[in-house]
Image (cartoon, rainbow, N blue to C red; front, side):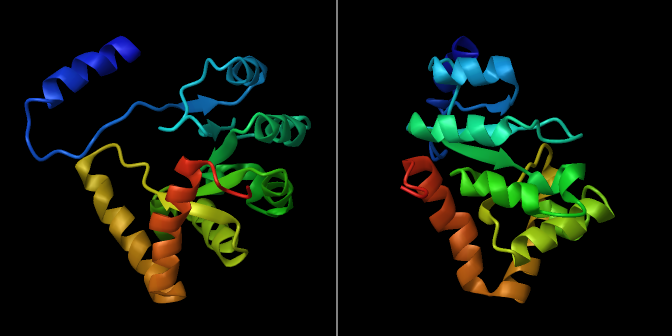
Length: 184
């Protein structure tokens, strides 16, 4: 992965005006990934203080809260990717509250707010936003056409919660995550 990224960087260096690009990875969280993260073998966000985690859709394992707490003790901020897509949270967000209490942070996929992934993730995203469980927001854009849903989600946030919430979710929260200063 780092070799491919190095080749990409070489090609990008010839193109003026581009923003800086860094390497990070979304990690499917399981026992193997947990051990690798503890051993420093993950690919965290730039700065090395926060790691993006994705969970299998069915449910969170019983040991997840303790493992996320262990990551925090190692000075890593566990960032839970798009919790609104996890079926186990569609009826109740108590489990996410527990994980956030361990020092993890939740990352909203903005397009979920306008139904990109279906009605249940949309409802869940709105409930989690109402409950103030998100620390930051992002897009999970994979193609140019996804931008329309991201913009619509941002408009929903601004209309419902105001410009300060846009600033908190898209500027302040991400900066705190990258700096590793969340709940510090």
